[in-house]
Length: 211
Image (cartoon, rainbow, N blue to C red; front, side, top):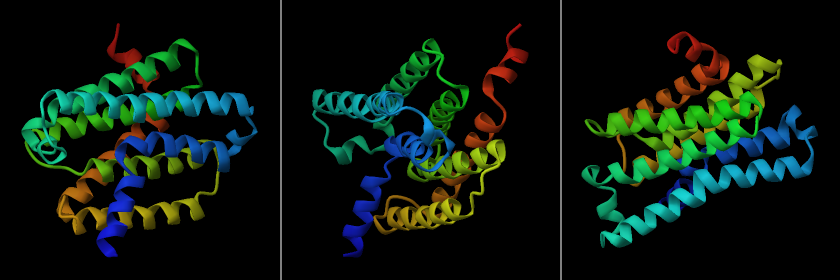
């Protein structure tokens, strides 16, 4: 039962789902719940398409073309192309949001998720890091950043997310996918990226880098 529970937690809180969970939380529990139903559905479909469906489909096609099993795809030397395919899909989602003048806070969530994946990709070239916990750290960062920017009391959702993060991290160790240090490092990377890109809007400090 413990192993089954660990597998279910890993499936529900896959790093692919982290941006979608962030938007679901915002549209249900934050002041963004007053937005029209049509806009909420549009945003959720857009995010789900480019952060879950398209990456999963393209990675599956890539795996089948190479005749690799899921276990072979998890090898460090085989992870590069799945990361690249996922990054391209996230970048496309960000581009579409930018072209449609989506609110900057929403774009910053996707930007943070994109940078989290880039950092995890670079770190995984030398040392294995938990992208699952990077996603959980990102979710915690979204809640904390939202509470700072909009004077929202984050106590209850923050407690629940921290407990959930502990459960997801424990499940990854029970499945022998990561060590405690890899779990901790992933969470810190996700949390840090969310803080940087949500509390300090990236379009502002990018203007200092681009003349």
